[in-house]
Length: 237
Image (cartoon, rainbow, N blue to C red):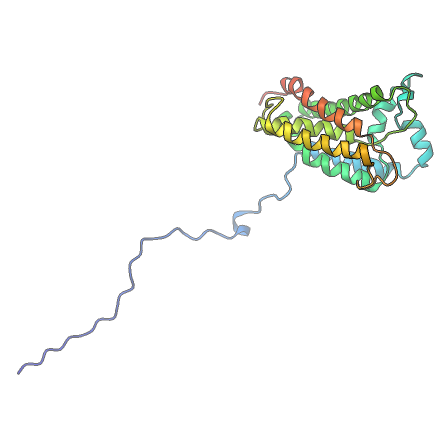
């Protein structure tokens, strides 16, 4: 009787389809920049926060008397305070808050205008003009008023209005009544109406000082309106 022997071969590993090659580590692929805001946006923050740092080197009363804006200043022709007041702030918290908002909302506008000199001039011209018109909007509601106002809030509100239209147009100027404009404008209006009713005690840096909420609303509206004509002046890529 013959004996049959079966040799057991070791099991072969299954042949899977080749998978994707492992990706190199983040360090090997090169570090992506975490902070890539346009330089104009960073410059506005430096202008706001650095400007307040310079302001602290001088007597407060003298600075306010010379450079803060009040509607009554328009009668004797002190129009320069409509501009100079934009670069003053009431405290570190006030300056830091405006700087943070400026950084958030200036980036879309800076990218629209581009990094070159012509685009930068348009960007900073837009920033100052919306701040001036925001102050004049306040003065229109308080003709001859003696209350001094300082801060870049009106100009920053203008950046917010412009950013809302650019968000609605996905980088280009969108409709004036797009969803982002209505949503951001409605939220900003509601916040400022609350300030008008109960005061700005809940805002960083406001303390017991009044808040020119009228300038905030005027600045947003001006930003929404002016981004259209300014965009037509933007350098072509």
